[in-house]
Every structure is written in structure tokens, then in C-alpha cells.
Image (cartoon, rainbow, N blue to C red; front, side):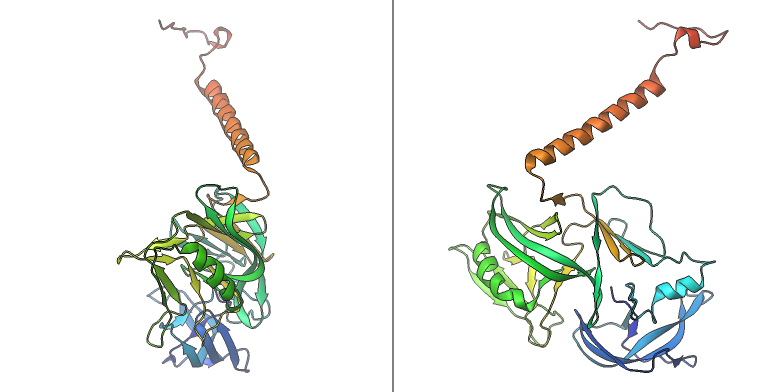
Length: 346
């Protein structure tokens, strides 16, 4: 979700040129800390190298990360750092590619679409404003609440906390809590999650692991802890509080960003974890539309939600009946053309 492309390995290329900006860039994100210089070279869309374009990228010269790959293709957008961005490249090739600054991710199709939005989806879409953090490239939105739901009374919560925190929206399949929320989570989350008969074990990240967060495990978690909810504005996105591992232990879905070298300032929210089927990022007006079937409006009571569902089902039934009458009714006698007959069926 970065706003520009950066490569970890130096290119063995004879066509490399200096980038648009000569000043080296230092930045940090969920993957670590980086420093690099701007360069420019050809990028190819196909193996036959018929489709190519020039684009600025950051050649990383110094890094402190556990992430291992050749580089990162930036699919976000930044108005303050538009160079090195694929949308500006597409805008110059508007006769060949769609050129809007938009990106869509569809979980079911495992598909990313650039430059235009696919066909509309009806999975409960909600629009939010997104914003940037200059020192931390990425797409942010405000996380309002963290709630833990029980299975015996879903009008009450084991814990509910107002946050108003910055949350980085990512494709990483994790939810990671930032440094300033860890104390409350250790007190509330682990206490609620635990039971008197459970064995608690914490597994911190170490220097030899590629993980950049900590896990902890329980042998017998609180089974009445039914869902965790992250609330953006008025919409709640819920997910199971823990997952069962092969060794019979249970691991919470919220990870702790407490590695001493990579202490997080912001929440890291993976869209796959919170039940988002698809999202549409619109960098033209700085909004994101999240599609999620299980999400719901927390400002509406259960009777209101049931009423809305009833109204929706009624409208659908009326439309289906109307279509049935229009397309399936028998022709009336006055509508029968000469030479046609009505056959009565007993």
C-alpha cells in the first residue's frame, strides 16, 4: 500500500538514469526502516518486453528490516510524493490504459484493478475519508472503537474502548496494535481472553524470526468471548478473537507490535481479517469504500436492523412478483391476435 516503488537489490541495467528528485529519502513503515536514492528506469508489463514505461523508484541503500523480497511496487498514492508512482505513468498512457487514480482489491477474485473500478458490488458498501502521514507512507483512516463481544448477550460487551487512533489499511493478513495501546491490551484483552484453567504463554519476536510482532498463546481460552469488533465511524467490522493452532493452543487475532526495534505508532489493519470482501481506493477524492457482508451500523438497535431487513426483503419480493406478473401472465382475450387461440388447462 506504499505510495512509491522501492527496490532492495541494485539493478544491473545500462538504462538507469537519475530520478526526478536528487535528495535521498528516509522512511519507515510496517516492514522496517529504509533509506535510498531516487533513480529512473524501464519497467515491463509483459515477459516479451513489448509493453514498457519509465518510472522513478527508490533504490534502497540502507535498511533495517526482517522483510525479504526484491522490492515493493507502490500501489497507493501521495500528492506530496507523486513521483515514482504508477498512476502518473498510466496518466501519460491514457490512450492505452485507464488513467484515474483509483485502485480496487477483490478478495474473492484475488484481483487488483488499477485505473478504474470494476462492476459495482452490493456487499454493504461504506465510504470513509483517508489521509496520509508524512513520516509514514500509506493509507490511513480513523479507528474509533475496539469492542469485545460475548456470545450470551450481544447487547453488552466484555470491554469497550474509545480509541480515535490512526489505522494503516493494508493487505497484510494481520491486525497489530501500536505501542501506546499495549498496556491496556495486556490488562484487558489477555484478562478477558484467559480463564483460570488456562495456561498462558507469551512468545515475543526474536532476532532470528521474520515476524515483526509478538504472539501469545492459551490452552483454554474464554469461550464466551465471541467476537472482536473494530469500529470505523459508525460501522463495526467483527472477527473471531482467536484461532486454534495445530498444537491445540489458541492464538489471539490481535498481534502486539512490541518488538523493541519496530515499535508501532499506528494500528495495522489487514482488510482480510476484518471481513472486507472488497475495497475501492479513490485517490482522486481521498476516500475508500469498504464492502463487507457482516459489517453493521452500531447506531441502529436490533429492532431497527430487523426492520431494515424486513423492508429490504419486502421490496425484493414485490419486485419479483411484479416481474412474474409481467412476464408470466396469460394473454388476455382482447390481446390475442387473429389466428391465435386460448387453451384452457384443467
